Image (cartoon, rainbow, N blue to C red; front, side, top):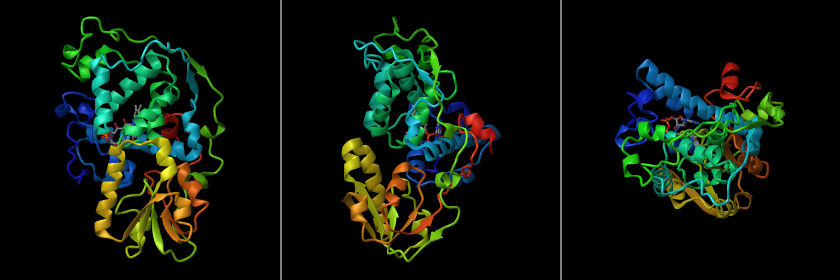
Length: 359
Ligand SMILES: Cc1cc2nc3c(=O)[nH]c(=O)nc-3n(C[C@H](O)[C@H](O)[C@H](O)COP(=O)(O)OP(=O)(O)OC[C@H]3O[C@@H](n4cnc5c(N)ncnc54)[C@H](O)[C@@H]3O)c2cc1C
């Protein structure tokens, strides 16, 4: 549905527009991509359009794939600066996200109210926080994660890493110039319009090299990173285990067992710790409610390992550390392959271009 109504025409030109909303050209497909309702291969194949629009759009899908490869390989290591670290020099008396600035307020309102921000606005806020104010990005990454409907540890952390220059050696600077260009008229509504605190570009911050995780250069265990290539069948399942990564009708384990009940467990401890916004939870509950009209579905709140202890499960591999951690403790009768756009290899993930070259 979301995919069918997306018009790619003008994507390359309008992807970065922020305001007015009618000028935005990005697809807003990411919440469905995040939760596996749309797979990257499926979206890749479905897009039609002119050369430039299609090429740009597919390039963005590859950024998502790169983020997933990185997270699948180094796990929580993606919250540490990858290659370079930005100097921290925040001043306690200054609030990096000053809501009296319209470009900050408006985007935070959209994030907190609708669970959404376009890519450009994510870069603005991330840059304002870390590049101009020298505050630690890891303290604010969670705020995005809590609210974004597409919030993922893979793409969110990569987005912050990219903004701070940690993977590219060049931090992304945010100044009034981008606002005038991408959100024309917004500054006219701002109390700071005649003395804009971001009129000038921020100084290029010093970036210190860090000891790189050796796994960024090569993968010692690609099989572990990528999961099975073919379905692994060990015994007969009595249910299909769904996770937040695998809520699509076409989820391989779900599709393989149309008559088995599907089981989803909201992890109580995780939810208490993450305190996800109600919008995020409603997005998932809506999807589960829809699935429940199509097949037998059981939904629980608790510890997934305990709730599922007696079950023999068919599941689709998910390239996230949480899936592996739980899978080790569950009885998996079948493990189905993750629908990669490009199956992970052992080469460098030190940057998007290094990853692209290694294809
Ligand atoms: C600080 C920061 C935080 C981010 N947090 C997330 C996040 O939690 N989850 C998330 O999915 N994306 C995140 N992104 C990437 C990007 O902003 C979103 O994927 C994009 O804005 C989603 O909107 P869209 O579907 O309209 O994208 P489109 O421009 O229509 O792109 C199509 C698809 O390509 C993928 N994509 C596009 N841009 C990127 C990118 N830069 N990195 C990775 N994948 C991309 C997404 O799956 C997206 O749905 C973040 C970026 C930054 C700078």
